[in-house]
Structures are given as C-alpha cells and as structure tokens.
Length: 130
Image 1 (cartoon, helix red, strand yellow):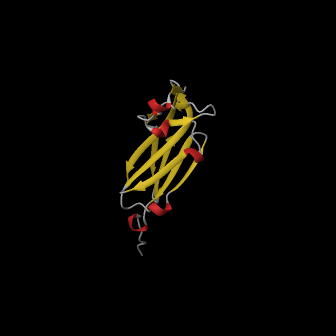
Image 2: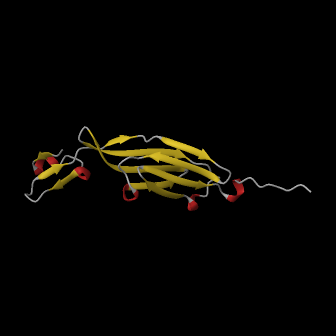
C-alpha cells in the first residue's frame, strides 16, 4: 500500500523508498519486513551445505556476499506481511578454512542452497597404511 505525500513533505524522508508516478505525485513505498529464514546446515567431508527457506524469492532477488569472514544472504520475497514487502536476511561467520571463491548457490521452489567447500588445507587427508 502506498502513501501519498507532497514533494515538500518527502524532502525529509529516505529517498530509497520514494518514487514519482505519472501524475507527478510522490509515493512512498512501505518499509519491508525483515525476517530471519529457517536454515538447515549439513557438514560433509568436503564442505558444508546450507539450505535457506526463502519462499517467494528466486535467483534474481537473492544477494549473497562474503566480507571480513561474514557471509550475508539477503532475499527479496514476492510475499507481503501486513501489506509490506518481505525480505529475508541471515548472517554467518565463516571459517578461514572455507574456499570463498568456490562457494556456489542455487534457488529452487523457495529453497536457496549454498555449497560451501572446505579449502584443501582443511580437508581430511587419508593415509593408507601398508
């Protein structure tokens, strides 16, 4: 739901949520509701699989970044709560033993799956005994 304000009233508002329509009226988008998605974390020999439940989001509305050892996932959903858009967001601190350049992600049916491989130095190396 949009609220209408005069251009003078809008000057004091955050312009990230403001746009003008074809009648030169200013409309303010409602602030999104930020939710923490449910997550499954599965650790394997070669890495970690993280599955986020992000209903209404797809590959075009998901942003994943790693900065200073923190992985951040943000997903804009097509769902609304109380007339406001829904955004899912979750942060994880990741180990130095992760090969950040090889992290992969895919989205399907409202589930975002991240494959986070361990760096070669962190993997278990089996030694055959003769």
